[in-house]
Length: 199
Ligand SMILES: Cc1cc2nc3c(=O)[nH]c(=O)nc-3n(C[C@H](O)[C@H](O)[C@H](O)COP(=O)(O)O)c2cc1C
Image (cartoon, rainbow, N blue to C red; front, side):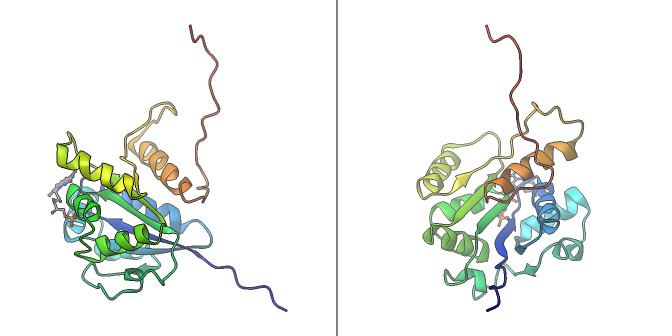
């Protein structure tokens, strides 16, 4: 008997209109290099605006990085149903508007419906929320998503790996996000501890 064909890992990637479009695009670029990962891309209208403004990427260039591209208006898409198996979803960057919609279960477009499905199916949802400072609504919405099992993952840069460029900072965050799905990104920098005086 033939061995069953390997099932690809399916990850939904959504890019919304918070600043930091580079996180979503770098995520797609990194996932594309990993074998056995199938990406489903969603970009909000404000997400496209920021991609063009911050990265000068064409729509087609970004869409070419994903295996499947969905319109945010297509609420009849595969990923709108829990019967379509996925490993979860990443929203990078995640605006406060999309956060609020997810926190309140609105399912008012395919991004928030797919996130709703991921939460109801108890799959992994990681939100790279981006705003500063936060108001109480933002904080309460982050708490609500956490209580539902989602992971709030603001893309706060780390400095312990001594990044020499914005690219290195972004890569570090993206690799940590991918790690959350049990997929090892090829260049993930692991902290091995440090020697030094502690007192
Ligand atoms: C240049 C620019 C930067 C923005 N940055 C942020 C941000 O960092 N965080 C945020 O929550 N909203 C930000 N916004 C506002 C969102 O784009 C806006 O609330 C939008 O309606 C979000 O819709 P979406 O979640 O469907 O993408 C920004 C808008 C613009 C034009």
